[in-house]
Image (cartoon, rainbow, N blue to C red; front, side, top):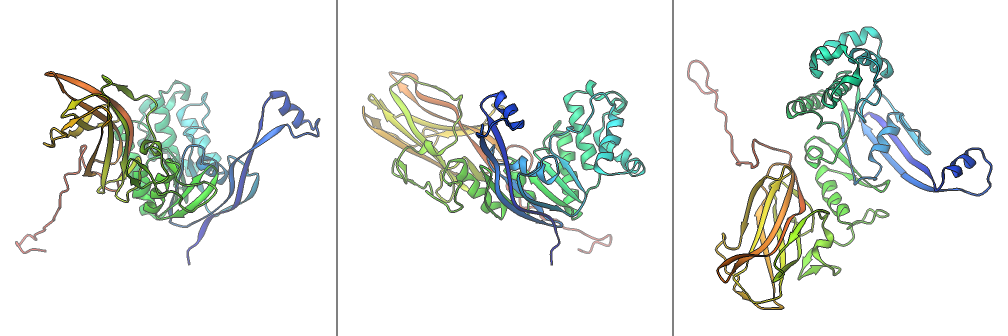
Length: 433
C-alpha cells in the first residue's frame, strides 16, 4: 500500500480586499460592525494526496491558486480553513532566494538557508562542496549577495535548494533559470531526484516538462480543483480552460469547440476560442481581410496547444472586397526569438485559388504533423497576390497567435528528424552479444 506523504484536506485561502487603507485599519482594530472588505478566495475546498515517490504536477492559468497551495504546503502561508499534513523533510524552490539576506555573503546564506530548513552545521558542511560545485560562481561566494548579478543569484539559490537532499521537493516555475547550460544541469538534477524515488510536486506553465516528468497532474482554475489524472488528459482539459470551454464551477466539459462551417458549435468566430496576441502587426491594402482563423488539434478542438507528433490544422477565412485573381494564402511559424522557421502557402503547394469577387469568401486549411520541438511558436497569416503585375499585400497578420508544442521527447534543433536508432554490440571475439 502506498505511503501518503502530503495530505491536503478541504483547503481554503481567503484574502480580504479593502477599497481604502483606512478600512483595513478600522477592521483590524474592530471599530466597525459593518464588513468593510470583499472576500477573494485564492483556494476553495481543495483536497489532494501525494504518495511517496510520486511526481505530481499542478497546472492552471495565472491566478488559479498554484503558487498559493505550494506556499501553504511549505508553511509560508497559513490556510483560512482546511488541514495539511506533511510526512517528510521539504526543500522548496518557490521564489528563488526569498530566504536570502542581501547583506550576507553567499557562503553565509548557504548556512542560513540550511539552518532554516533544519540542518545542523555538520550536515551543511557535508553538502557544502556539492552546493559550491553546482552554483559554480567561483570567488563571488565570499562576496555579499547584494553585489551578485541576477544570474549568480538564481544559480546559488537553486544550488542551495536542490542539494539539501530533501525527502520532498517542491518546485514552482524554477527549472528555467540562468543560461542554457545551467538549465541543463538543473534538469539533470531533477531527473536524478525522480530516479532516486524522491517525492516531487511540480508547478509549471511548461506543459512539455509536465508531460515528461509527472506521474499524475492536478488541474486548478480560479482556486477550484477541476480534476486530476494522467498528464495527457489534464493537458487536454487545460487546453479547454485556456479558451474558456470549461466552467470553473464544474468539472464536466462544456462546448467541445469543434469546428463546423464558419463558426464554432455555439456560433461566433473561431478566433474567439483562441488566445490571441495583444500586439499582433495587422495591415493590408483593404481589398481583402483575414476575418477568422484558428488552430485545431487532432480531436477537432480549437486550441493553442498541440502535442508533438499529432496532426493539426490551421484554418484561415478570407473575405474579399474587390475582384482578386489567384490570391495567395500563407501560414508561417517563428520561434520565440522572432526567427522564421517554416511556412507554406497556396502558391508553394501549387493550388489554384481562382478569381474572387467582392463579397466572396475563401477558407483555406493547412493540415500537417507537428514535428517541431517542444516550446512556444508564433503564427503569422497572410493573403497576398499580384495585382496589375505588382506584388500586393491584401491582408497580413504577423504573430497573431502562439502555439505551444507539448513534447516528452526532444532532439537537437527545431525539428525532430524521426530517427529510429538501433544499437548492436559485439564482444571482443566478434560474436554478437
